[in-house]
Image: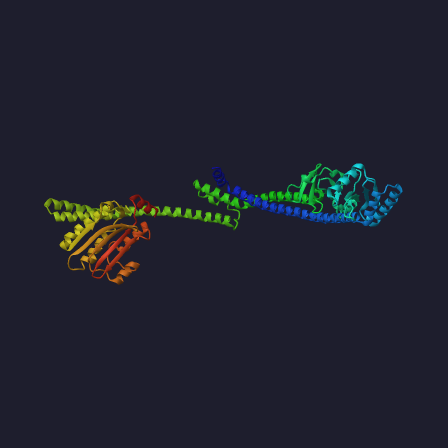
Length: 594
């Protein structure tokens, strides 16, 4: 119901507003399409940023993992070193402080030789079973009791395998820790603990040096979500579990009022989580400005196109509205108004052609009005002359009436009937005002004509008719049956010896109403019959001929109706009158319209 009201309201809009609405709709469709494509491009750009960021993250992750694996191999080398094993075993078995001092020095030297001075190694910390520390390296430090306890617990968890300890408040390094087990005699007795302090900051500084221009922040978290490394202390509150639910690998987050583009990945070896956090403004400032500029440009162009479209629409609609104004003025009866406003030169487009055609049409209407006025004068004159011409037929009709009554007075019934029938036919021929009459009236004319001819030809003429009552009120053109009966007598009865039988009947089917006039006369030659069908023949009589009847029917009802003549030499003639089906009112309307 609502859509119907909207549609009706749209259809009732002025043409100008319809075109403006259509123009706006087209522009809106193009704008939506363009902005959709632009948004798609922005999404592609986001994915490309993620791809590059993920690629950089993967490279950094692989590099860090590689360095940490080196440290794991170094810890294994220390725990399996024969000298380290023997030194720790001696330290365990001796109680002499001097011996312990000397063995400790040898152990420190061995650690320096194995790798305490390697790149990224700040120090190698070895603890015997009594938790006495033996450290070698560039940046040695004594671990706090809490830190040492954490190291020992982490080492025991793996039972000789390597484990990693995250940085603490006092120690910013990550430590690869192992228990040292005695394997020379395969007793696997615990001899101590080794921890390699790895400078994770130095590793990350070298890896992230190419990302400094973008102000990218690198973060590393262990499996317990403890932060292993961060470029800035302000990012301490970020936890991987807060952003890794969607498993997309990237997302835009908001931290402390600032938006960041976050890329993250989980390492396979250590189960650590690596993150790259880039300020959103650094990556998308240009694209955001471009998007704003595009939106503003689209909006400005939209308004401009609406304005230009309105002006352009006016060049099309204004001439049409001007023509509509002229038509309304002419509708009120002012037939001379159509030429107002034509002083300016008309355009050659369809609107100009409509104005020109309207002008020609009005000129033709005015001309036809003048011609019709002249014709009406001629018709009045013709009617006056016709009235004058009817004086003589009326005098003849009155004379026949006098003969009729004189014959009745003296008892001459035959003369009376002939005079009465002749008078009826004459009166019917005079009164030709009605184009259509009931079939019953047309049959009455035929009956009077047969009465006259019966007295002339006596028993040689046999006339029969088969007309059902339901067809008696069917309207038919006047004088279409009597001339056919007259032709049957003239060219049938008069041309033969014997009795002439004429039969009149009517039949209705899908094609129309058929009235048949049949006789058993000598028939018509085929050559002359062909001429009748083509209309190329000369009538032999002076009355109403076949051509006249057929043309009257076609004028009244259309080209598909008329007469059909069927005849063979020696077999008689059959004339079919084809009329349309329908009641009297429809016939009258048809005649009026034609």
